[in-house]
Length: 320
Image 1 (cartoon, rainbow, N blue to C red):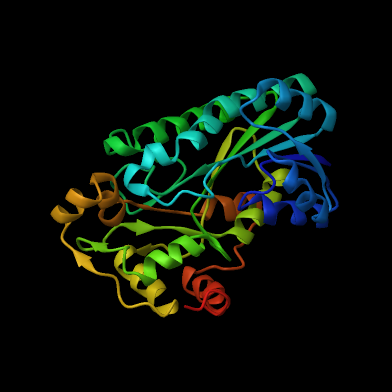
Image 2 (tube, rainbow, N blue to C red):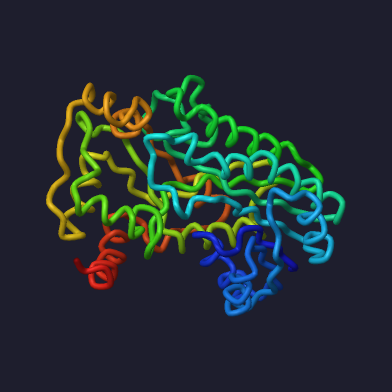
């Protein structure tokens, strides 16, 4: 099939494009800068320079590519480190999830695209209640103030994509990313952990679900052919974990001292209610539907294995 990956040089795109090419698909990848076009060529795809927030440029790129499938991986998170001001940090990504999604869907309809797959997120977005959330569970109806605009953008994206019959829409809710120099194992995060600037707040009872970027890409490839139209899939590993377990374990793998422990009231004062909620209240996600319907199995079924694998390489590369 002919596939256009919007955001081909992002964390997932860099793993996804080679997997699509290996699966014998013809791939066009978009990037905002000409400097990254060569990266897309080296992955075996055709580059297209396009800003996801420019409707006319996106329209021209889609029509020129003539894809059967569009995979929307557009975010702007590479330099995000200050999560205390969460909605501000995610402002441009939220525009991509709203305006960018609308522009890309409109272009897809005009170009006769058959399938549209979009990146979403699962984690703090789910409401409270049962510890392991499925796709049928509602998203949080009353998130902390600092998360509201970001959750609204996610809801806009999911509603627009799932509500689309032409092209048929599928949403993939990825868990918390990690991989070499990515997400929880990015250089910025490693530096914060080594400086003990990521405290364990309260009891650390918040449950997180993780996904290695290579596994996220593999699930996306599976969704191209086996995903059911109008469906949402949680793309996470098999082992959710409380913050009280994974955060000290990650610090140890990186050769850092254990994280500082602070009470929830102090966390609210210095970090904000939203980060306290992420540390103490968030719920994990089930991958049963994705495994059943997509025929997908994560190669890194546990964050324990995945963190250790990446950290063993990372600690050598970024040795203090």
